[in-house]
Image (cartoon, rainbow, N blue to C red; front, side, top):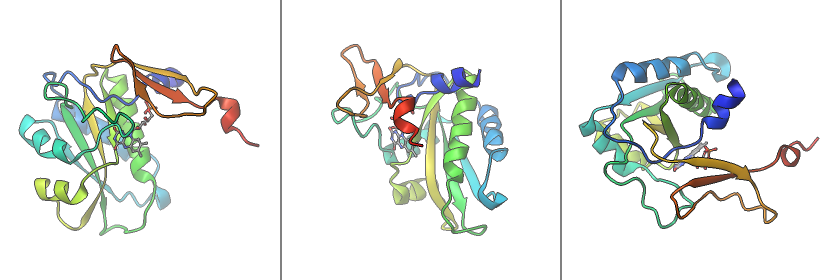
Length: 189
Ligand SMILES: Cc1cc2nc3c(=O)[nH]c(=O)nc-3n(C[C@H](O)[C@H](O)[C@H](O)COP(=O)(O)O)c2cc1C
């Protein structure tokens, strides 16, 4: 079951924007992050939740979408995320970098997928712009944004071809293809 959930947990970037996500659902997802691993168990992550259209509209302009889809500026109005979870580091707890936020984001996305939702981790964030837009105090570093919604796109995992190109791509039907390296390629010893 875990393999199936992880296999289905593809990054999704187009959504049925009209389908809302409840604040309680976001709280349940953050609770999965809360229970996840944390370096030295410091638990420095804090979260901002957004599921109303006005707040969502403040967040969206500060996000970068799909680096490899050069002709695609990101989801159009109507296909944008219905919710966001902004992951912060509370520098009053630690200033040290860690990978806690990626683990938290994965827990959130797996939980979302289990609920029939989908999403995408966004590391390409205009951090100072987002800080201003949401009034985030200097005490918090913006680490990652998780965009969430009801998926509106089909995503297929495929093997990396002989060229070794790992760039994802979208076909003429709008299906998103994600090349993954083979197991034998990644086990080196
Ligand atoms: C740390 C991290 C940051 C990412 N940042 C972005 C981003 O800024 N914009 C985006 O569209 N996708 C982003 N992604 C999603 C990746 O592009 C995606 O994971 C990759 O294409 C593989 O697809 P998959 O998640 O379906 O396996 C990020 C993923 C990770 C793990």
